[in-house]
Length: 229
Image: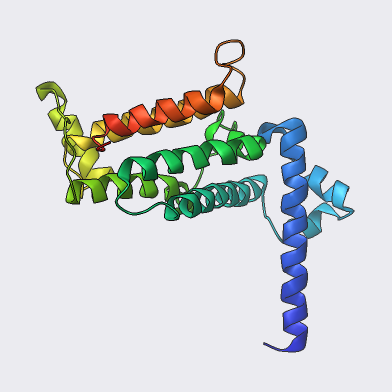
């Protein structure tokens, strides 16, 4: 790469970062539904036609912000989880879950973008899936490792749910026992329900010691997917 090409690449990276930063500011102030490329361009002193060279549409900018948010959350969870000894399965689970909460409290508007109300008129493309799956892959990995080690005691499955459980397992975690799949999906939903309730105010005057409550709740979720204490 020539010196001129390198300078252009750096300039493009810097402008892209500035566009994303201003878009995040607008998300915090107005919400994702009101995100406007023209407004972003105006705040940056750019003509809108110049901004379209970086993001052809509002949806392209939203997608970039969503991928960034998922990757930031995924990196936080992976880093926290990696610090726990491999054989401490329940602690690996709770530390990963606690990292989700800590990240969400530090990035409430980005959390709302990826786990809040859908943005009208926007459908996330398949390019968001690898980033979105990072947290799930950590939790699935914990349960997989426990299954290969001491096992997953106490898991059961009603006969009427077996067909659906087999479908779930084949699609999301074929390396896990069929009995674990519904428990994992339920735990996933409850984890983000707990975080969302805290972040969006539903625990006001209900849960005061939220950190201890959350730790207790996600420990019970770990037990529900069969992790040994």
